[in-house]
Every structure is written in C-alpha cells, then in structure tokens.
Image 1 (spheres, rainbow, N blue to C red):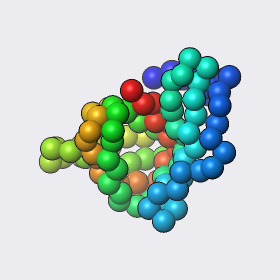
Image 2: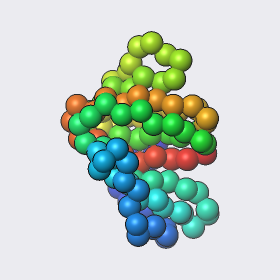
Image 3: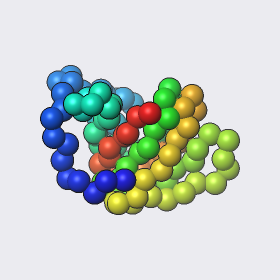
Length: 106
C-alpha cells in the first residue's frame, strides 16, 4: 500500500456511513480516476462485515485481529499493515485499539 498521508483531487460524500450503532464511522471518497475508497474509524468491538467487491483494508493506526470467512484462525494487524478480503465474502474484526483505516475497493 502507498504510504501517502493524503488523497488529492477527491470527491467526499458529506454524510458519514455509520455502522454498528456508531462503532464504525467512515466517509466515502471517489478519486479523480473514479477509484472508490472509504476512510474511517472502528472503535474497540468485535464486528462482522460483509463485502460486495474485493477490499484491501489498510490500517493507519490502532490494532485489530481479523478472521476471514472460511478461516478458523485470526491474524493481527497494526499501523502500516493491510489485509485483503475477497468480494462477496465477510470478515470478523476484533478491535483492541481504535483503528483508523482506509478501505480500497475493487
């Protein structure tokens, strides 16, 4: 993943995506080339997310354990790490330290 600290020339959806009673809040971005991303925060909790398109979850800050659909063991991720989630799948994320993330779609 790129180590840039900002995205330039983007459109930002002003209304936040709020999931799991506020435990996950993100904003949708569309880059100039049409690429879609979201940036957000997940508070300490254990949550299950479903995917449509494949995703790369880039952890900017915090720590979490992730179990992908069909897996029996989790992997731990922290700042500077990322994980891939197949499309039409799901993952369970157990956040131990508030996670700041970028989700790269497609």
